[in-house]
Image 1: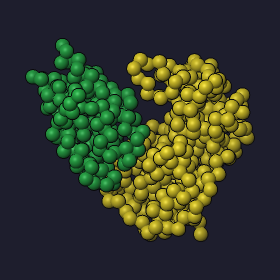
Image 2: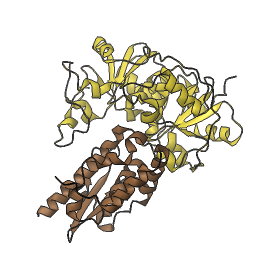
Image 3: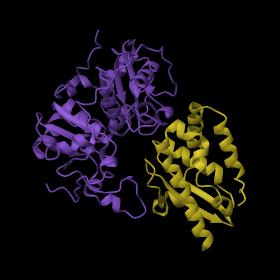
Image 4: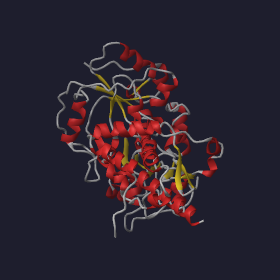
Length: 296
Length: 145
């Protein structure tokens, strides 16, 4: 049986409100027995969970749990099954993910779980900061889970993940660069002594529109309203829900947040996240690069 | 070339980290992050005097003072960045108060001797390498003055 959805009014306008839960809803679930629901915390900082987390939640680290330690790729089906099983997650489990930085890493984890076709995975709207701002319970106690039976699933990348060749074939179609304006224009790479981006070339993929990911989030970390998001992506940037869109950033994490906004909150049907992103494109030989601030 | 001795507190930390598994290493790192001293007022009130370490995922600022030949370290990193604070904590606990030459002789690959790459992933180690290199650069500059 499917776990109940959060039917809060503030989520109702989104295209897929079942993909979000509010802090109040989650607190209510955790106050009672909640079989079939597991909460995961996914942060940029691998230690943040250890400083305090939502009671009963497990840590899911993007580096050590979701990325393959050798190949630049995500873990395979066996490693993923182990990560899920250790946290008591079965294929039918409803997973709620939350994290720091307006759920930037939580959205990345959600996107990776979607590559594995995990059906019911939701974000806690506002993430860690919203939970804490409301003085809700946090603990340092690390739970132990009864290992669950998680099947070994072959990842299905094609529908929502783009590789470099896919992006080359996509040139001329809709693309969103979600990095900061300085990264988009190419300026940031020219800061003396600070090769912080790890890329040889600065700029953006030709034709990409610049919409920094954080524009989709409110001050408190929650997503903006559907109307505001439509204004941003559809009115301003002229994207339409039925076109093919590729999103990218530096390594595919910030663009997971935008992927979530476009697909789950605005109902776009064909959005792929190019996780190779600028750390691949900006180092690739003879791919086209454009520099300068956005023209619009 | 002779092998220069590492400062004793740093050696002790390397042993501590080496004697436990990856999970407990994270706990040690967390403890060190919590033990990182707050900035003294002369820096807290003048953050512009600190140098930013851009290679860290989260903003980290540091200052180095060489007084009577000994190195003193000052760090500032937000509480929401415990890993970065932990790296700073290791360097503070291991190097603060040591003679300048001892600090300058610390090998650049020391950040990899704590077994942390496995616990936090190698990518995240970049920040600690950058902190050490800036500490050494600032120390070198002040010794030369």
